[in-house]
Length: 323
Ligand code: XMP
Image (tube, rainbow, N blue to C red):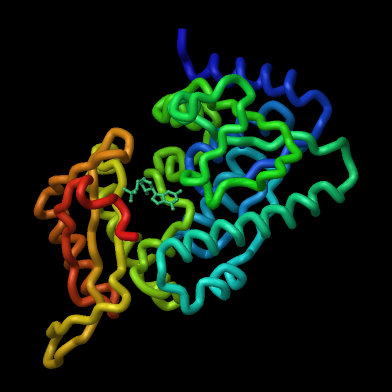
């Protein structure tokens, strides 16, 4: 019978068998799948696993810290953090086209990760032969992948992984659905803030700023997004919402009024959706009082924003993200 305890024991056994005495590398993205697969491998091989977290500066408020501090405390994983914020933002400067943003982020991710990989390879110890991949059962089915198929979907990872993959894959979540992965994560004491996280795109906040990505614009979006998450969590809506993109229309200004004066600020778009698999989606019917609190707080607390609008488009024809 399925219990998360059994799954952990069984996978730890399997991973030990597969890996033997070798070392393993893993990339943490901040998402659920990489967090749980990495923690399982850590449970199995301990410090023969090195996890790499590339901080590209495009995560939401508090998320990098949750990985660097809370996740490490809970799992004991050996984590290598690469601060690549300036590198990513430098390459994104002046770029407004969404696909170009995605390409740049994917390319830089591979560069940074490969450099980290080389550093790990250069440290003394057994040979590094394996790479952890958080592939879930639906991904396996979707790609028609049999056992051992290198099933890497660029859409779900930051640009995918290097083509000349010199590692074998360890994929401890291959038989699991998302809900089961969350259960296993809880069993491994991974903080709820990570285990309960909604799907989040690899290019992160870069594709939720319509226009150029700058540190100032990221700061505005982060504050608005943090308010949205606080209020939806407080209202107990996290499980019924599939994803809640908060989007900054950075090149749009509209007139507003505050106190005695006119303002000329940016709109923030709320895009809460319900969905089963992100292929289709419907806009979430959030309670008006929750929407009101979000709107009031954002316009009061985020000075640059003077308007909050709600996206009521289903998918299709609208996509979940705005870019
Ligand atoms: P759309 O906007 O196409 O999104 O309705 C469907 C799902 O995919 C996610 N998404 C991405 N994930 N890299 C990712 O890893 C991307 O470039 C990307 N674009 C969209 C989106 O968040 C939703 O879950």
